[in-house]
Image 1 (tube, rainbow, N blue to C red):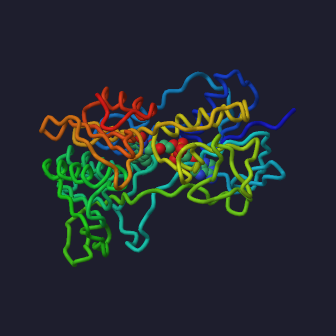
Image 2: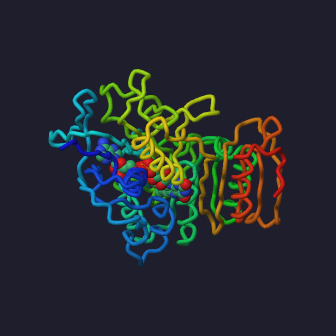
Amino acid sequence: MSAPTVVVGASLAGLRAVEALRLDGDDTEIVVVGAEAHMPYDRPPLSKKVLTDGDRDPAELTRLEVAADLGVEWRLATAATGLDLDGHRVTLAGGEQLEWGRLVIATGAHARRLPALGDLSRVHVVRTLDDAVALRADLRAGPTSVAIIGAGFIGLEVASSCRDLGVDVTVIEALPVPLERAVGAAMGARIAARHRQCGIKVETGIGVDSLEGVDGVEAVRLADGRLVAADVVVVGVGVSPNVGWLEGSGVDLANGVRCDSRLRVLAGGRPLPDVVAAGDVACWDQPGQLLPVRVEHWTNAVEQGDAAAKTLLRGDEAAPFAPVPYFWSDQLGVKLQMVGRAAPGDDVAMLDDDGTGTKWLVAFGRDGRVVAALGAGRPAKVMKLRRAIDAGDPFPPEV
Ligand SMILES: Cc1cc2nc3c(=O)[nH]c(=O)nc-3n(C[C@H](O)[C@H](O)[C@H](O)COP(=O)(O)OP(=O)(O)OC[C@H]3O[C@@H](n4cnc5c(N)ncnc54)[C@H](O)[C@@H]3O)c2cc1C
């Protein structure tokens, strides 16, 4: 009997890869190895409903839709610790060797921490269900003030959730403008302004020096010496791809797992025919992009899981992975949606703005073409612009 397909990472990208294999009629043996004890769940609610919807079971709030009974073996609470490419084996925690015929690497990313800040209690990151449940417990204990370190999407979503809970919130961001790399300076400033309008304090252009407190955290000391009161702190300073288990395996590692345009994993610069990667961990050569790309968003994990499975099934006949990226973020009762990739120096056109801060649409252009769009409360128009970007329509676009 041939060795099973092994999927390392029992989350969104891994699950979608398994579903795509099954939907394509592949009925071979599949083993899914996951470090967490949970069956795959959805992470977006962790910074949103799981924190605010205190009476509902987090497992229910994060349930992922699964296409069918997949007939796979789940090896949960079991991390992969090593990979032998020549021997076609994955080493599991505890030493077991698992043979694979085909391998899907979908180990995602972990939240960065700030070890210099010490280990006081009531200091959190939000990446896993267990993280969110722990933060939720501290938020339900009735804190008076929460500080969020880092004004990225997760930090701003947690800020929004804490504000919905009626807690005094301060967001601290080292850069002068939040989200500048993702949405440009003008839109980053617009999003920060809305948070301030809604009563959230947003301190920008200032670092954190230390956390103060005896047992649990009581305040954040800023680099200029000021103290921000906080009986709960959330650190949202980005994520790093989970590649530690691949060190020394021969897999090319640079900002994640390096892959070719069809998501085949590279080793010594050459694609491995039976090894693919997908999701937050994958850094691939997207046709049309100057540099390899790694994306940390839900839709990318879904689409890549599917594309990586197609590559396993069809090899060179599979299409290169070249989508127009899409993500959303729910903040302060508004759904922000972005398509495409904006870059510094892009032309910016405001296409629509109702003046309330809750409904607006902006497009980004480069060399006369529309390359990205960001909208608040404008879902249909954003999706129309996703198609315009794909088609290479002129800038400014018609909506
Ligand atoms: C709080 C939060 C809110 C978010 N909100 C949004 C949103 O609103 N919109 C949006 O577009 N995106 C959002 N995202 C991003 C989205 O959830 C991720 O892009 C998506 O989860 C990536 O899926 P993945 O399967 O690649 O990786 P992950 O979901 O990180 O899963 C990887 C899995 O692999 C496991 N693993 C790691 N190492 C090993 C190992 N050595 N052995 C075995 N298993 C291992 C991990 O434990 C994990 O379960 C959010 C993410 C978070 C954390």
